[in-house]
Image (cartoon, rainbow, N blue to C red):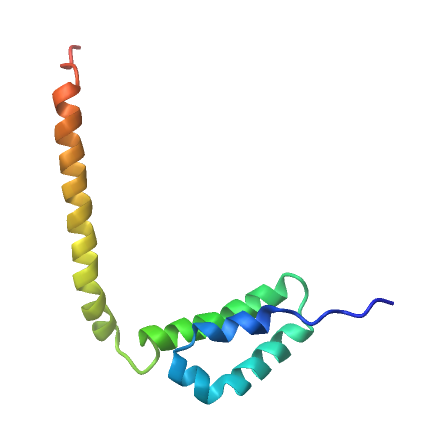
Length: 107
């Protein structure tokens, strides 16, 4: 019987946590990820590792149960407006360029 090689998943999943949090809890994060992926199948390992990585991203971005939806939307609104405005400017500029080259519509 062949021996199973340990999964490399626990190596990368804790890296998504903020540096300070990772330094304080790295042993615990690695143990949790190793335990969660040990008996998981080939599809379960990445899923469990992505759960740990997702927790890290939530910690890094400050999204969690301690914040209200109003705070999250309030922080997301300015970048969303900036992206939407930039997209509109690009669409208007490209429409103006293509409009000059377009043939008139004749039914």
